[in-house]
Amino acid sequence: MKKLINKIENVVVEQMEGMVNAFEDIQASYSPRYLWRTPEHKQVALISGGGAGHEPLHAGFIGSGMLTGACPGEIFTSPTPDQMVECAQVVENGEGVLFFIKNYTGDILNFETAVELLHDLDTPVGTVVIDDDVAVKDSLYTAGRRGVAGTVLVEKIVGAAAKRGHSLEQCETLGHEVNNALRSFGVALSACTVPAAGRPSFVLKDNEVEFGVGIHGEPGIERCSYHQLDELVDQVMMQIMDNTPYTRTLRHWDRLNATWKETQVTNEAFDTDEKYIVLINGLGGSPEAELYGVARAVFKYANEHGMTISRSLTGNYCTSLDMTGFSVTLLKCKNEWLELWDDAVNTPALRWGI
Image 1 (cartoon, rainbow, N blue to C red):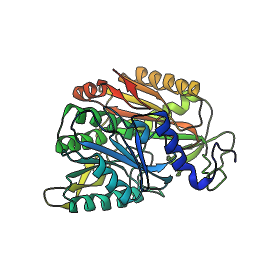
Image 2: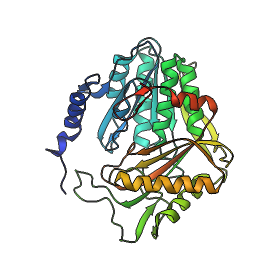
Image 3: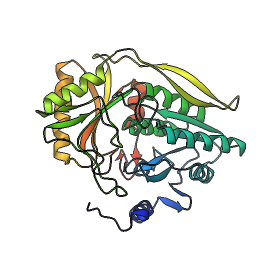
Image 4: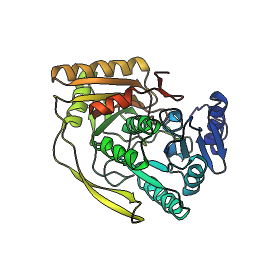
């Protein structure tokens, strides 16, 4: 293993220090660990977080029109409740705090604990659980669909709404609606190497791909043979567009009754005559040139099936260290969501309209 690191135990802190040096408007606390930026206007504070190793998710999306703060854990390990609570107390300015939580068991448990602690401190708090990965219904790391690259789209759209002055309740409802209109699917050509392990998390033959991989290297639907890109992308798009009914249970914090509420959510149908935002996301190790090859194949599939792609992004937004491969995210989009998407954003990893 060769990595651009010093001591393994200092990886996350040193990378945080580098980010603060590179972006003067971002501040950091190192004990407990979190990063934040003070908004220009009074608004709902938006906080996300999760294990490090997925950069630029989440700290790369701190800034105007997106996140207020982010809490990084160790690599592929959930942050702890004290990180979330202190970050929330630093950035909350009277409009409440909304947590974006990817659907992994550790993230759910720790963020839920933080919510309860903040409630006891009289801080208005809401939650949006993101579960956009349609590759599997259950995995080694989570109960139900995993939260992956679609998180970026939720954070952008709700971030624009918060900047416009939407209330905590409005932002939370919007987050739930966007999440249910999201689908993602990932493919790995080779595994990532976690520094603490020092070796790849799995090994593929030269003609194999992990089809439906998670962002921690979790197994997907199958390990299958790989022939050419267009065929692989067609298979990915068919998985995303599959409208087989699927109902799952998501939890959110009921502020009125100070309790957790479970809601049954049914997969939103995806039709070819809808408008879509598409994210072609690199997993960290694939050249950008190859990601544009994926983008070409995605647009080719859309044109052949009468789909309208209204907006698109191509690049590394939700990675898995040095994993080679890609994911495709589709959001079935309402016109008002497109307007929020187009609003100006200024973060280290996403910037337009400024």
